[in-house]
Length: 392
Image (cartoon, rainbow, N blue to C red):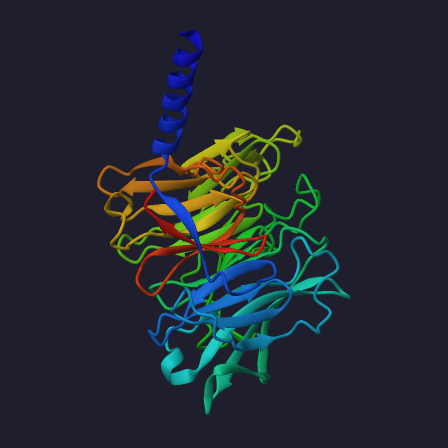
Protein backbone atom coordinates (compact mmCIF):
# COMPACT_ATOMS: atom_id res chain seq x y z
CA UNK A 1 0.00 0.00 0.00
CA UNK A 2 2.83 2.37 0.94
CA UNK A 3 4.67 1.70 -2.32
CA UNK A 4 1.44 2.22 -4.24
CA UNK A 5 0.87 5.58 -2.51
CA UNK A 6 4.42 6.68 -3.23
CA UNK A 7 3.96 5.80 -6.91
CA UNK A 8 0.76 7.84 -7.08
CA UNK A 9 2.37 10.84 -5.39
CA UNK A 10 5.40 10.60 -7.69
CA UNK A 11 3.13 10.54 -10.72
CA UNK A 12 1.13 13.53 -9.48
CA UNK A 13 4.31 15.47 -8.72
CA UNK A 14 5.77 14.72 -12.15
CA UNK A 15 2.49 15.67 -13.79
CA UNK A 16 2.25 18.95 -11.89
CA UNK A 17 5.78 19.91 -12.97
CA UNK A 18 5.07 19.05 -16.58
CA UNK A 19 1.76 20.92 -16.53
CA UNK A 20 3.53 24.02 -15.20
CA UNK A 21 5.10 24.58 -18.60
CA UNK A 22 2.91 26.97 -20.60
CA UNK A 23 4.88 26.28 -23.77
CA UNK A 24 7.13 23.63 -25.25
CA UNK A 25 10.04 23.84 -27.67
CA UNK A 26 10.23 21.47 -30.63
CA UNK A 27 13.28 21.11 -32.87
CA UNK A 28 12.97 22.40 -36.44
CA UNK A 29 15.39 22.58 -39.36
CA UNK A 30 16.64 19.20 -38.18
CA UNK A 31 18.13 18.42 -41.60
CA UNK A 32 20.73 21.16 -41.15
CA UNK A 33 23.84 21.45 -39.02
CA UNK A 34 24.73 24.80 -37.48
CA UNK A 35 27.77 25.98 -35.57
CA UNK A 36 27.24 28.43 -32.70
CA UNK A 37 24.11 30.23 -33.95
CA UNK A 38 23.87 33.60 -32.17
CA UNK A 39 21.28 35.63 -34.11
CA UNK A 40 18.51 35.26 -36.64
CA UNK A 41 16.54 37.71 -38.76
CA UNK A 42 13.47 37.09 -40.89
CA UNK A 43 14.03 37.97 -44.55
CA UNK A 44 12.62 41.46 -45.30
CA UNK A 45 11.05 40.24 -48.54
CA UNK A 46 8.17 38.59 -46.65
CA UNK A 47 9.05 35.10 -47.86
CA UNK A 48 9.44 33.72 -44.34
CA UNK A 49 13.06 32.73 -44.94
CA UNK A 50 15.52 33.30 -42.12
CA UNK A 51 19.03 34.71 -42.07
CA UNK A 52 20.92 32.62 -39.51
CA UNK A 53 24.07 34.19 -38.05
CA UNK A 54 26.82 31.77 -37.02
CA UNK A 55 29.37 33.18 -34.62
CA UNK A 56 32.27 31.95 -36.76
CA UNK A 57 31.43 34.50 -39.45
CA UNK A 58 28.86 32.90 -41.78
CA UNK A 59 25.25 33.96 -42.42
CA UNK A 60 23.03 31.34 -44.08
CA UNK A 61 19.53 31.70 -45.55
CA UNK A 62 17.13 29.06 -44.28
CA UNK A 63 13.96 28.23 -46.25
CA UNK A 64 10.51 29.04 -44.91
CA UNK A 65 9.78 25.31 -44.82
CA UNK A 66 11.27 24.16 -41.51
CA UNK A 67 11.28 20.52 -42.56
CA UNK A 68 13.16 21.24 -45.77
CA UNK A 69 16.46 19.62 -46.67
CA UNK A 70 17.25 21.92 -49.59
CA UNK A 71 20.57 23.70 -49.54
CA UNK A 72 20.83 26.77 -47.29
CA UNK A 73 22.77 29.28 -49.41
CA UNK A 74 25.51 31.38 -47.82
CA UNK A 75 24.52 35.04 -47.68
CA UNK A 76 27.78 36.31 -46.19
CA UNK A 77 31.08 34.73 -45.21
CA UNK A 78 33.77 36.65 -43.30
CA UNK A 79 35.09 33.60 -41.46
CA UNK A 80 38.55 34.14 -42.93
CA UNK A 81 39.06 37.41 -41.09
CA UNK A 82 41.06 37.74 -37.90
CA UNK A 83 37.93 37.94 -35.73
CA UNK A 84 38.32 35.42 -32.95
CA UNK A 85 40.91 34.87 -30.24
CA UNK A 86 38.39 33.34 -27.84
CA UNK A 87 35.42 31.49 -29.36
CA UNK A 88 33.09 31.95 -26.41
CA UNK A 89 32.05 35.57 -27.07
CA UNK A 90 33.98 36.88 -30.07
CA UNK A 91 33.02 36.65 -33.74
CA UNK A 92 30.09 37.74 -35.87
CA UNK A 93 27.48 38.85 -33.34
CA UNK A 94 24.81 41.08 -34.90
CA UNK A 95 22.74 41.60 -38.06
CA UNK A 96 19.96 43.99 -38.98
CA UNK A 97 18.43 45.14 -42.27
CA UNK A 98 17.80 48.77 -43.13
CA UNK A 99 14.08 49.65 -42.90
CA UNK A 100 14.26 50.69 -46.57
CA UNK A 101 16.19 47.58 -47.64
CA UNK A 102 13.80 47.05 -50.56
CA UNK A 103 15.09 50.23 -52.18
CA UNK A 104 18.64 50.74 -50.86
CA UNK A 105 19.70 47.07 -50.35
CA UNK A 106 21.58 48.00 -47.14
CA UNK A 107 22.18 45.92 -44.03
CA UNK A 108 24.44 46.14 -40.98
CA UNK A 109 26.67 43.68 -39.16
CA UNK A 110 28.57 43.85 -35.87
CA UNK A 111 31.67 41.74 -35.35
CA UNK A 112 34.91 41.54 -33.41
CA UNK A 113 38.43 41.94 -34.78
CA UNK A 114 41.90 41.39 -33.35
CA UNK A 115 45.19 43.34 -33.32
CA UNK A 116 44.07 45.65 -31.89
CA UNK A 117 41.06 44.05 -30.24
CA UNK A 118 37.91 45.94 -31.22
CA UNK A 119 34.32 45.62 -32.35
CA UNK A 120 33.20 46.92 -35.74
CA UNK A 121 29.83 48.09 -37.02
CA UNK A 122 29.71 47.93 -40.82
CA UNK A 123 27.22 48.83 -43.50
CA UNK A 124 27.01 46.62 -46.60
CA UNK A 125 24.73 46.12 -49.56
CA UNK A 126 23.56 43.07 -51.47
CA UNK A 127 24.18 42.64 -55.18
CA UNK A 128 21.57 44.32 -57.32
CA UNK A 129 21.28 41.17 -59.46
CA UNK A 130 21.26 38.83 -56.45
CA UNK A 131 19.51 40.08 -53.31
CA UNK A 132 20.47 36.87 -51.49
CA UNK A 133 24.20 37.55 -51.60
CA UNK A 134 26.16 40.18 -49.69
CA UNK A 135 28.57 42.33 -51.67
CA UNK A 136 31.64 42.31 -49.40
CA UNK A 137 33.36 44.95 -51.50
CA UNK A 138 30.61 47.39 -50.50
CA UNK A 139 31.54 47.29 -46.81
CA UNK A 140 31.72 50.66 -45.11
CA UNK A 141 32.94 50.64 -41.50
CA UNK A 142 30.78 53.06 -39.56
CA UNK A 143 32.13 52.59 -36.07
CA UNK A 144 35.01 50.83 -34.29
CA UNK A 145 35.00 50.43 -30.51
CA UNK A 146 38.19 49.41 -28.66
CA UNK A 147 37.73 46.29 -26.50
CA UNK A 148 40.25 45.62 -23.72
CA UNK A 149 39.20 41.98 -23.26
CA UNK A 150 37.60 39.18 -25.27
CA UNK A 151 34.20 39.05 -23.56
CA UNK A 152 31.17 41.34 -23.15
CA UNK A 153 31.11 42.54 -26.75
CA UNK A 154 27.32 42.31 -27.14
CA UNK A 155 26.45 43.59 -30.64
CA UNK A 156 22.65 43.39 -30.69
CA UNK A 157 21.21 45.76 -33.30
CA UNK A 158 17.70 47.11 -33.87
CA UNK A 159 16.13 49.94 -35.83
CA UNK A 160 13.63 51.87 -33.79
CA UNK A 161 10.31 53.25 -35.07
CA UNK A 162 12.16 56.58 -35.40
CA UNK A 163 14.41 55.09 -38.09
CA UNK A 164 17.50 55.35 -35.88
CA UNK A 165 19.87 52.42 -35.34
CA UNK A 166 20.26 51.31 -31.72
CA UNK A 167 23.41 49.36 -30.80
CA UNK A 168 23.93 47.46 -27.54
CA UNK A 169 27.57 47.42 -26.40
CA UNK A 170 29.07 45.47 -23.47
CA UNK A 171 31.32 46.90 -20.77
CA UNK A 172 34.64 45.73 -22.25
CA UNK A 173 34.83 42.42 -20.47
CA UNK A 174 36.75 40.47 -17.89
CA UNK A 175 34.98 40.73 -14.47
CA UNK A 176 33.90 43.44 -12.05
CA UNK A 177 33.96 46.18 -14.72
CA UNK A 178 37.67 46.47 -13.90
CA UNK A 179 38.24 49.35 -16.33
CA UNK A 180 35.16 51.19 -14.99
CA UNK A 181 33.90 51.70 -18.54
CA UNK A 182 30.15 51.25 -18.03
CA UNK A 183 29.82 54.52 -16.08
CA UNK A 184 32.36 56.46 -18.18
CA UNK A 185 30.32 58.79 -20.44
CA UNK A 186 33.30 59.49 -22.70
CA UNK A 187 33.53 55.83 -23.80
CA UNK A 188 30.98 53.73 -25.69
CA UNK A 189 31.39 50.49 -23.70
CA UNK A 190 28.52 49.47 -21.43
CA UNK A 191 26.04 51.60 -23.32
CA UNK A 192 23.14 51.62 -25.76
CA UNK A 193 24.05 53.84 -28.71
CA UNK A 194 21.70 55.63 -31.11
CA UNK A 195 22.93 56.78 -34.50
CA UNK A 196 21.53 58.00 -37.81
CA UNK A 197 22.88 55.83 -40.64
CA UNK A 198 21.20 57.93 -43.33
CA UNK A 199 23.31 61.04 -42.70
CA UNK A 200 26.83 61.94 -41.55
CA UNK A 201 28.20 64.24 -38.92
CA UNK A 202 31.58 65.84 -39.58
CA UNK A 203 34.37 63.27 -39.42
CA UNK A 204 31.98 60.34 -38.83
CA UNK A 205 30.49 57.60 -41.00
CA UNK A 206 27.07 58.33 -39.51
CA UNK A 207 25.23 61.23 -37.92
CA UNK A 208 24.61 61.79 -34.22
CA UNK A 209 20.91 62.69 -33.76
CA UNK A 210 20.54 66.14 -32.22
CA UNK A 211 17.96 64.85 -29.73
CA UNK A 212 20.33 62.29 -28.19
CA UNK A 213 20.53 63.00 -24.44
CA UNK A 214 24.24 63.86 -24.14
CA UNK A 215 24.77 65.85 -27.33
CA UNK A 216 26.84 68.97 -26.66
CA UNK A 217 27.66 68.02 -23.06
CA UNK A 218 31.35 68.26 -22.15
CA UNK A 219 33.11 64.94 -21.61
CA UNK A 220 30.19 62.89 -22.92
CA UNK A 221 29.77 61.00 -26.20
CA UNK A 222 26.78 62.15 -28.18
CA UNK A 223 26.11 58.65 -29.52
CA UNK A 224 25.07 57.41 -26.06
CA UNK A 225 21.35 56.83 -25.51
CA UNK A 226 21.59 54.95 -22.18
CA UNK A 227 24.44 53.73 -19.95
CA UNK A 228 25.39 51.53 -17.00
CA UNK A 229 25.04 48.13 -18.72
CA UNK A 230 27.20 45.03 -18.35
CA UNK A 231 26.64 42.72 -21.30
CA UNK A 232 23.33 43.36 -23.11
CA UNK A 233 22.20 40.21 -24.87
CA UNK A 234 18.84 40.42 -26.56
CA UNK A 235 16.93 43.60 -27.42
CA UNK A 236 13.59 44.33 -29.04
CA UNK A 237 11.57 47.46 -29.74
CA UNK A 238 7.84 46.98 -29.21
CA UNK A 239 6.33 49.22 -31.86
CA UNK A 240 2.83 48.88 -30.40
CA UNK A 241 3.72 50.21 -26.95
CA UNK A 242 6.97 52.06 -27.65
CA UNK A 243 8.81 50.01 -25.01
CA UNK A 244 12.46 49.20 -25.72
CA UNK A 245 13.24 45.88 -24.00
CA UNK A 246 16.78 44.78 -23.15
CA UNK A 247 18.19 41.74 -21.34
CA UNK A 248 21.45 42.39 -19.47
CA UNK A 249 23.71 39.55 -18.30
CA UNK A 250 24.70 39.65 -14.62
CA UNK A 251 27.89 38.48 -12.96
CA UNK A 252 27.48 36.77 -9.59
CA UNK A 253 24.04 37.67 -8.30
CA UNK A 254 21.22 38.49 -10.69
CA UNK A 255 20.10 38.58 -14.31
CA UNK A 256 17.92 41.49 -15.38
CA UNK A 257 15.44 42.83 -17.93
CA UNK A 258 15.23 46.57 -18.50
CA UNK A 259 13.13 49.15 -20.28
CA UNK A 260 15.66 51.33 -22.06
CA UNK A 261 14.88 55.03 -21.76
CA UNK A 262 16.51 58.15 -23.11
CA UNK A 263 19.41 59.21 -20.91
CA UNK A 264 18.81 56.53 -18.26
CA UNK A 265 21.54 54.90 -16.17
CA UNK A 266 21.09 51.21 -15.25
CA UNK A 267 23.63 51.14 -12.47
CA UNK A 268 26.38 48.69 -13.44
CA UNK A 269 28.86 48.38 -11.79
CA UNK A 270 27.62 50.18 -8.70
CA UNK A 271 24.70 47.76 -8.88
CA UNK A 272 24.04 44.35 -10.31
CA UNK A 273 20.37 44.38 -11.34
CA UNK A 274 18.45 45.50 -8.22
CA UNK A 275 21.24 44.87 -5.70
CA UNK A 276 24.39 46.71 -4.65
CA UNK A 277 27.43 45.18 -6.32
CA UNK A 278 29.59 44.05 -3.37
CA UNK A 279 32.94 44.18 -5.20
CA UNK A 280 32.67 47.90 -5.81
CA UNK A 281 33.59 49.71 -2.61
CA UNK A 282 33.43 53.29 -3.85
CA UNK A 283 30.09 55.07 -3.66
CA UNK A 284 28.09 56.14 -6.66
CA UNK A 285 28.39 59.84 -7.49
CA UNK A 286 26.11 62.08 -5.48
CA UNK A 287 22.74 62.48 -7.15
CA UNK A 288 23.01 59.26 -9.17
CA UNK A 289 19.56 58.09 -10.21
CA UNK A 290 19.64 54.48 -11.37
CA UNK A 291 16.79 52.97 -13.36
CA UNK A 292 15.22 49.90 -11.76
CA UNK A 293 14.99 46.63 -13.73
CA UNK A 294 11.51 45.42 -14.62
CA UNK A 295 12.35 41.72 -14.10
CA UNK A 296 15.14 39.86 -12.32
CA UNK A 297 16.10 36.31 -11.45
CA UNK A 298 19.03 34.87 -9.54
CA UNK A 299 20.81 31.63 -8.90
CA UNK A 300 20.01 28.75 -9.34
CA UNK A 301 17.28 29.74 -11.85
CA UNK A 302 19.97 30.82 -14.27
CA UNK A 303 23.45 32.17 -14.87
CA UNK A 304 23.30 34.15 -18.14
CA UNK A 305 20.20 35.81 -19.56
CA UNK A 306 19.32 35.66 -23.26
CA UNK A 307 16.72 38.02 -24.71
CA UNK A 308 14.37 38.38 -26.30
CA UNK A 309 11.45 39.27 -28.55
CA UNK A 310 8.00 40.69 -27.93
CA UNK A 311 5.43 38.09 -28.93
CA UNK A 312 2.55 38.99 -31.26
CA UNK A 313 1.83 35.60 -32.79
CA UNK A 314 -1.54 33.84 -32.90
CA UNK A 315 -0.88 30.48 -31.22
CA UNK A 316 -0.31 31.70 -27.65
CA UNK A 317 -2.92 34.34 -26.87
CA UNK A 318 -1.88 34.68 -23.20
CA UNK A 319 1.61 35.72 -24.26
CA UNK A 320 0.71 38.55 -26.63
CA UNK A 321 2.71 41.66 -25.85
CA UNK A 322 5.10 39.75 -23.58
CA UNK A 323 8.87 39.97 -23.87
CA UNK A 324 10.17 36.40 -24.06
CA UNK A 325 13.63 35.60 -22.74
CA UNK A 326 15.58 32.62 -21.45
CA UNK A 327 18.74 31.56 -19.69
CA UNK A 328 21.75 30.25 -21.59
CA UNK A 329 22.84 28.06 -18.70
CA UNK A 330 19.63 26.44 -17.47
CA UNK A 331 17.44 26.69 -20.56
CA UNK A 332 14.47 28.07 -18.63
CA UNK A 333 12.26 30.60 -20.44
CA UNK A 334 10.29 33.52 -18.98
CA UNK A 335 7.71 36.03 -20.22
CA UNK A 336 7.66 39.64 -18.97
CA UNK A 337 4.71 41.97 -19.45
CA UNK A 338 4.11 45.64 -18.78
CA UNK A 339 0.82 47.40 -18.17
CA UNK A 340 1.35 50.80 -19.76
CA UNK A 341 -1.67 52.41 -18.05
CA UNK A 342 -0.66 51.23 -14.57
CA UNK A 343 3.08 51.44 -15.33
CA UNK A 344 3.49 48.03 -13.72
CA UNK A 345 5.57 45.08 -14.87
CA UNK A 346 5.26 41.36 -14.14
CA UNK A 347 7.05 38.22 -15.25
CA UNK A 348 6.68 34.47 -14.94
CA UNK A 349 8.53 31.35 -15.98
CA UNK A 350 6.73 29.69 -18.89
CA UNK A 351 9.14 26.85 -19.59
CA UNK A 352 11.35 24.90 -17.21
CA UNK A 353 14.03 23.00 -19.08
CA UNK A 354 14.45 19.20 -18.64
CA UNK A 355 10.78 18.86 -17.77
CA UNK A 356 9.43 18.56 -21.29
CA UNK A 357 7.47 15.35 -20.98
CA UNK A 358 9.70 12.29 -20.86
CA UNK A 359 12.63 14.00 -22.61
CA UNK A 360 14.94 14.02 -19.60
CA UNK A 361 17.94 14.47 -21.86
CA UNK A 362 16.58 17.66 -23.42
CA UNK A 363 19.52 19.98 -24.09
CA UNK A 364 18.58 23.58 -24.70
CA UNK A 365 20.92 26.58 -24.46
CA UNK A 366 19.10 29.69 -25.70
CA UNK A 367 21.42 32.07 -27.55
CA UNK A 368 18.75 34.18 -29.30
CA UNK A 369 15.01 34.48 -29.86
CA UNK A 370 13.47 35.68 -33.10
CA UNK A 371 10.07 36.31 -34.58
CA UNK A 372 9.42 34.19 -37.67
CA UNK A 373 7.46 35.40 -40.67
CA UNK A 374 4.20 34.14 -39.17
CA UNK A 375 4.80 36.00 -35.92
CA UNK A 376 5.61 32.84 -33.98
CA UNK A 377 8.84 32.52 -32.01
CA UNK A 378 11.93 30.51 -32.80
CA UNK A 379 14.77 30.05 -30.35
CA UNK A 380 18.37 29.38 -31.32
CA UNK A 381 20.36 27.04 -29.12
CA UNK A 382 24.08 27.73 -28.85
CA UNK A 383 24.86 24.03 -29.20
CA UNK A 384 23.48 24.06 -32.73
CA UNK A 385 19.74 23.56 -32.67
CA UNK A 386 16.75 25.70 -33.65
CA UNK A 387 13.50 25.26 -31.73
CA UNK A 388 9.95 26.37 -32.40
CA UNK A 389 7.80 27.49 -29.48
CA UNK A 390 4.75 25.23 -29.43
CA UNK A 391 2.02 24.11 -27.05
CA UNK A 392 3.04 21.61 -24.33
